[in-house]
Image (cartoon, rainbow, N blue to C red; front, side, top):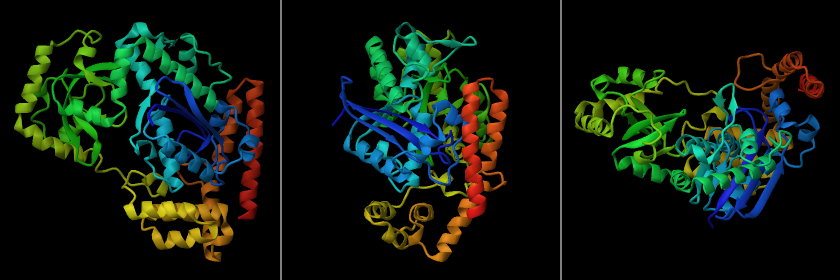
Length: 465
């Protein structure tokens, strides 16, 4: 099976690790973008999640929408995983999906004991219409009209669609299914108006194509933060095979080739001009042959200068020994998260645990807790399994297990510590701030409804736990 899966999520907030999807829409199409299948889901957030008032305002969701949703989180994520697996191989596409929706999916799969990288399995490729729209606007500007906000290009989905004749009202925006159909039509428009560039961009939905471009050496173009940069590939990051260092050929190599590792790291992390940049191979980078960039690049060095700089870098022995050390040093001092949600990228799930997760999903609740204790060596998975048991089937836990669950939930909802998730008191305070700042009666009424629900949850947490 080929074709595309277009999707969109509406979530309780912006933190992939500490928020969850509550609406999901997935639409499978053939290569010609004819719809083959749709999956639309609504789910309740689990009891330990406090939705952001801002997120509820943006999506228009009311507390009753969350409370009355037909699925729990586990059911939603099982359905999504099955849909994605059944459609393999396909190109999975969203709008701003590689930076947001994809991360939300990974974390939700992870915390529901499903394969975190489901969208990369079975031959799937991943692409982002926002990435492609920005690339087309920069390299083939006649193909798309881009709205402006305060004199700067704006790539918000609704505004971009409406300016290019695609219907997506402000009222429909942030409804998952409406956003998906608008994304399909925007993708169709880009593909029709800029076919050569879009074909090249879609090749980069497969990280193997990106890797091959870089491994071939030579002069390439990279679009980064709206700037066209001439680059050449250097080496893969030692601790991350999906990240590769490239040299910015607009920078004179003499300025950095002899730097020791620590100074090279500082140069890579500097604001503005950076001699070496990192490219995520699996995030559809706009990394293409320089011939596709040359016409749009700012006049500066000639191709001959760029090629000479590639020769200088290749011939300089020291950089090939200092760069691996510098790449290892970049994140060496990053403190690990104490919370299992924040540990997705610490290490892969062991193969034995991954197989045990499949079995866990097939078991009844009265067998899951004991099975997890006996078969999960990964402490993150044990924590998630215990959490699911407490929230869904507390009767399957021993007295001590239920007490631990109650203490965890009370802390999660009410702590005054500096934690990376939203608590009930902080959410209530945010409702007050938003109401003071708003002069929209409908919005203020919505905030009152949210605040009442949050206050009821806080009272229940403090009296029952």
